[in-house]
Image (cartoon, rainbow, N blue to C red; front, side):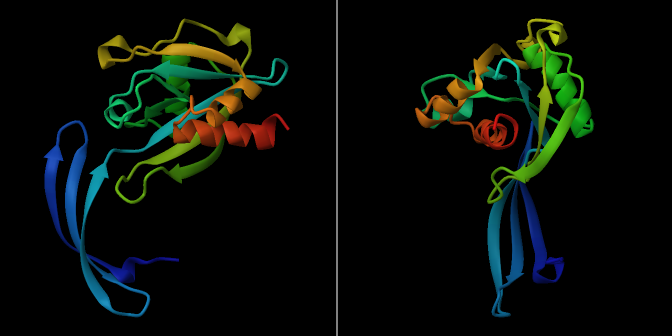
Length: 193
């Protein structure tokens, strides 16, 4: 299915083009009743990313991160974010990127990583598509402390948690990151059943 016959981009105005790109897009959209309507939207061109939930069936545990994030803080979240490891693809494939992020952020060199799905995280304004992965881990796969790259401003704490505790942290509001909630719920339904 294609909807390209229902969308005509008329004008794109770049509002910011620093680390990411913010555009104002004016377009005509043909509604379900056949009527054309002109609309304007701001579109945040962020690039695509990958995220990962490492899990250990024997210990019923997962590895997450805890770090400061400015946007949630500015939105009133006065705490560190607990998240699944993740990173922007840049010019790498999703699998290449998530392997690199696992080593940089959590200190694990993983064996097989399995892609489980892709999702647009905020399709009303952001172009980013996130590639979701899971991978089994064992203590012998730990090759470093993780923590991220200091020159990129990362200051990441690695958390190894029982899956039941991680799921409870969603319910009590300690985990409020969408990608992490999605991965933990996937793990509860498909891995730790």
